[in-house]
Image 1 (tube, rainbow, N blue to C red):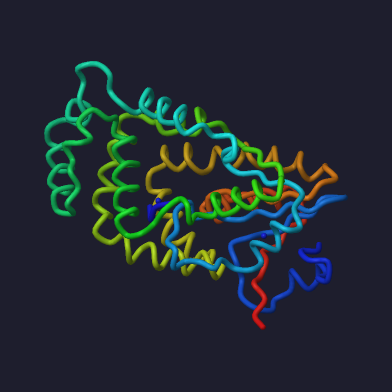
Image 2 (cartoon, helix red, strand yellow):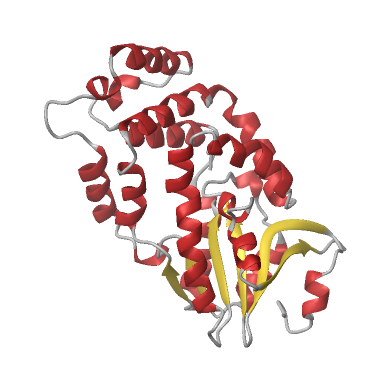
Length: 295
């Protein structure tokens, strides 16, 4: 995520105790089917060691779920195949350069902004703008100690692997990369320039984001993250709104199942009028935001 970028959980807990107003909210919802429960957990894909332990209600939802569903089928990803696909889609293989795609003036702005935050922009000379933006974001976050190994997806995937629980994906790697690769050149350039311009304040922004995420502060997430992205309609539609609508149909199918599910997707997909919880509620699904109990 950037600035512009959770029945019974344990045998002794009742559904009423889980969904009441004790403790503080978390970025997780419970949707009820006729015979099952589906938890929707908002994820931050990269976290720091210091951001753990996670709210206990996350692991309680995991314990209650029979299977996990994430944006991608995390336990089936081949890192070598992923790297090859990323290079195929995000790296320029002819004589074209990033400067050619951006134009001299915009490229000079990006180069200057990158130098101000000590990002070696020349290493991105043979990338498409969307891939350059993702690379910059990951580089900056890794410098600050953020790592996917501490993120929600890896935390849950490792538990599922140990416990033998099924992990499925809502999308394929090809589809996810395709959402970015399919953006117009103008939208890709906007994404790169915006990413670069925000690198100097990333640590402060991430601290506030993690606080809001941990305490289920959906108003903050909407006003300070989602609305920023909505300023870029093409990006917002491709990365957030269109995917949410596709996921809602898949989630409704899961709500007709007998098994309980934990679905883990980026937190921005769960807030706002286009967020999955509101879309499900609009279709008549019983859904409520959950709380972390405080003893």
